[in-house]
Image (cartoon, rainbow, N blue to C red):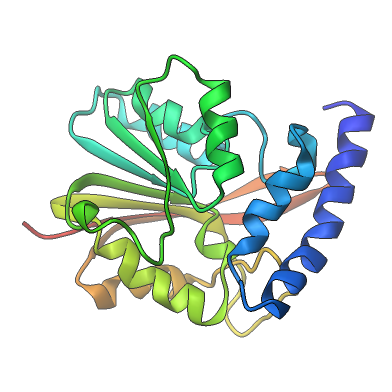
Length: 229
């Protein structure tokens, strides 16, 4: 990463708070995602979470699985498509969606020959035909980009997408219980990650890891759940 890229990325991160606040003030709490992509105008450095590569937490999970996968996978908040493409490369039939039309158009242009189905949709109002249909549901950095009633609504929405016997993989920043942080993003506590237990999902693994962000290490968690048959 060059210094110019790093400088643009810092500016992008500094602006997300005001972009989010403006959207909330308009009564459109999810509109800030599309605004970030729109203002970026094709420059990935100006999208704080877009690194043009598979997220390391997902890449490690794929490497550890050591198998070719089958079935349908759903990538939540797919952004520019790198995680969706990585899941597709393992054999999954992948649907990837984002609330931002700009992000979806951008992803389609980046991967014009992809087998991934890129769709504009909202996690909080998913298409009815998706309910209970996916063998793997994956989300990285979506829950941490939501807060308040939107985050609370996201948990049952995510759980509703998993097929009987299917799995949920959640990856994100983690913070200590009882602490708070100014966002976005708003990292989850361990108990917040584990709220899916209350929705009938069985936790199979909770793994902590650290990623370097600039000069600092940032605590993350990767959590796997399963829905009973």
